[in-house]
Image 1 (cartoon, rainbow, N blue to C red):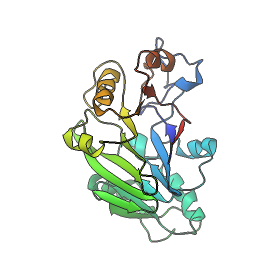
Image 2 (cartoon, helix red, strand yellow):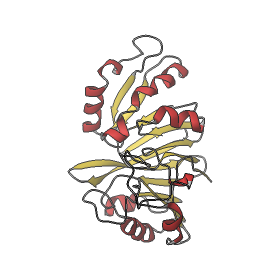
Image 3 (cartoon, one colour):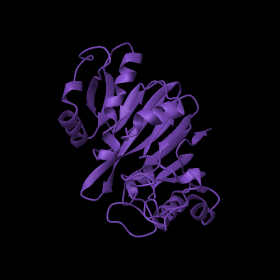
Image 4 (tube, rainbow, N blue to C red):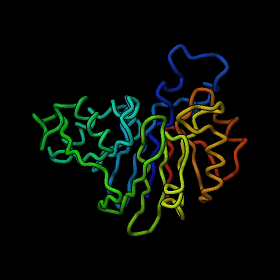
Length: 259
């Protein structure tokens, strides 16, 4: 099981346009954040969760050469707009449509943005093709299973995901872009080796957890190791991580976690 953090920043990225003073130290490369997504290898099967606007460069920089299944957690621009670059993986998969899973709302937004890709196979070589399926409660894939649960994110719901590798029993929960982690989501994540949580900033936000809220949630969920992701320019990696418990860390672009 390996988790690759392709991006760990917010919709504006870090540094942001007209980057304000008083934010994180940009001399520290760990504070340079592209928009949030992860790439998971589980039993030899490669799952891409979300596709940021920087998805193409994230794949090149991190040597991502395989995507077998794609999951969209929700339809906000910073998670969906890189999906056109999945076209390369259709080529690499022999010119077949890529299985794409999301909520009903997420699938509808994909249809609206990428109508040319909703095909059984690419229109021509080099084009994307998506086989759309609503995310089930449990998705069985080669290598393991992925359970799903809905998390609150302002007026919308976001898919939370729990990955379990069949051969080893290793598991982790991925709960990005959420205001809280409710009882159902916590029960599904019980016993997870790793928990990944939305930790936007120190100040309150109507649809995201703060660093303090995410830290408290991580403590309560009691995984061996937890990571915070989806952070704004106000979250300085070195200063913030120094204030966290030893088993709760900040993720950063390019971080690989294998166990």
